[in-house]
Amino acid sequence: MTRHFSRNARGGEPPLWPPLLCVVALSVTVLSACAGRPTGVLEPVAANPSAAQVEMLVTTTRSRAEKPGEMFSGERALSPTFAEITVSIPPEAARKAGEVAWPRKLPPDPGTDFATLKAAEVDRGAAEKWLNSHVRKSPDGSVLVFIHGFNNHFEDAVFRFAQIIHDSGARSVPVLATWPSRGSLLAYGYDRESTNYTRNAVERLFQYLARDPEVKEVSILAHSMGNWLALESLRQMAIRNDGLPAKFKNVMLAAPDVDVDVFGSQIADMGKQRPRFTLFVSRDDRALAVSRRVWGNVSRLGAIDPEQSPYKEELAANGITVVDLTKIKAGDNLHHTKFAESPEIVQLIGSRLSSGQALTDSRLGFGDHIVAATAGAAHTVGTAAGLVVAAPAAIVDQNTRQNYVHHVETLVGPSGGASSNTADSACGKESQTMSGNCNR
Image (cartoon, rainbow, N blue to C red; front, side):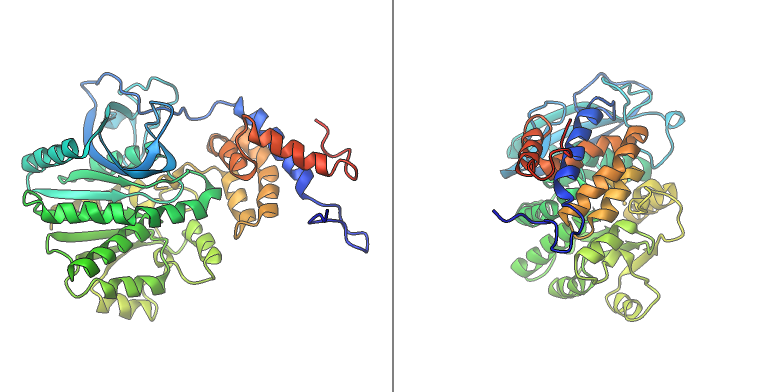
């Protein structure tokens, strides 16, 4: 049987894949024992009177998780599911504005941590009743829909949205539209296809908000890859309805991972009656720089220079407001979450809504940056090499450690069985020529 990466006729280097795979598989065992950020944080706890509360409605195309405290996984469901969630926000003295204070252990302490007070799955009728009740109690009958970005677990999206609502002082009723993301840097292709999978569900949400007479105004905040889902759903709705409803007032595009040329066609398809678009860009966004290489070196909308032609003229012609975050020193090390982690920008978002915001990409450590750099356009050998190089970083850096096992499982399968079997199989195939490389 022909082997890939075999030694060439002139005596080149031996194949890299099997030994790298073995080292990566070994790393799972080592790092699984290292404590990271706890999972299952959505298990409800008792309220603390000193903490604030954010209530939100959730609609999702994610499948249910096996662990109750996770609620929904990164896999795809056959139909949308709804939930009512209440998040407790610790007092100002316990955290900085723009920060999600993740619990270090379970159960969380609402006095110092973000915590969940209620997490209940509901049917469509109960979801509509919740929305109607909360819109009636709101000061202006407005709704804010948040669509998160790439590399987000369900709890990431829930806590980040709660943080944005609280820190911005937004008066709108919060609705989280969350799609199946596996929460891994190596699942970019799966995540992207999951946004396409979710377009119809988000359009149905928009159509319902358009029909509901209690809802007077709708704003949309999308981050990263979630912008593709938001824009495609709006475009789909506009084509179906021959335009967008006037109550759709604001669309805020934060670090959009969208082809700049495709964005132009999406805007054109929405027609002349469009919401007010606000674009948050950052030319030092490293996540979008990687995305640009993956997508054929075409500029990503969230990383353009809005003062350069032809962008300056096109943005002006379409009435799009631009907020350039390049010089803002906030957010993760990839500079991809500035809009949510800078107090000034979050307050600007709240002001924008009132006058009518990594996303949890921020769970990245410096080892993740190594993985992202070596992965390139998802070349497997490069990814394996990155995981090997990142292994020492995972031992000392909590964020890297939290993600490392996810990277490995994406590459070689779950550590509980598939990873070991895959590694054993790969090592076994090469055992005659590389017998010393796979010893454990």
